[in-house]
Length: 186
Image 1 (tube, one colour):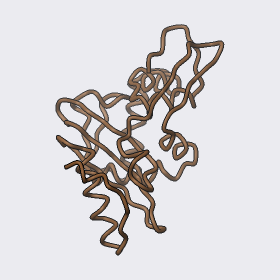
Image 2 (spheres, rainbow, N blue to C red):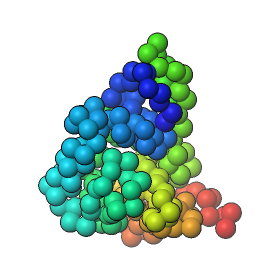
Image 3 (cartoon, helix red, strand yellow):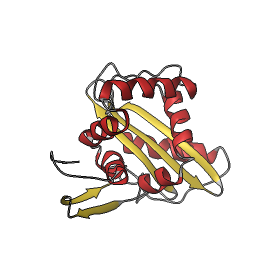
Image 4 (spheres, rainbow, N blue to C red):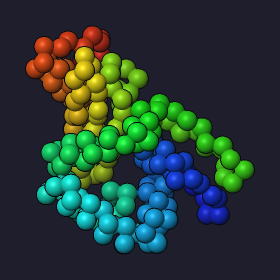
């Protein structure tokens, strides 16, 4: 996200930085602000994961960069379903871009990195991810013809193309054709 020591951000601004720009610094700032330190916040994250039935998920750091943080596609769908219940979260992840301005911090333009947000009809965000261990990852929420889908791509070499195929396939199972020309480039 690009925060600097001494600057003051709201929780909402930090969430925008976390979700749009993959701001690892925002993840730590949120963790420390909520729990006092990252270790306590990680403990809370793992408690919440257990409450949500994420049986194959373990958090080792607030940002997800630690390769001992693990999850599965099934658990990420469960987590996404839970998170999308919150209107503030839904608003943040569907935002294509926002500029944070304040007298208490520098001017910060943020752009959503979620592939397909502005190109695949009905996509309303969630999150990209990458580590060397996990590869290119993408969690996508879409809604078309009153059918909501959450797709998860892990360890991809083409997360955008893979997600397009998954969403098309998912909607086809409901007899829904989503009109786009996104695969014509392949």
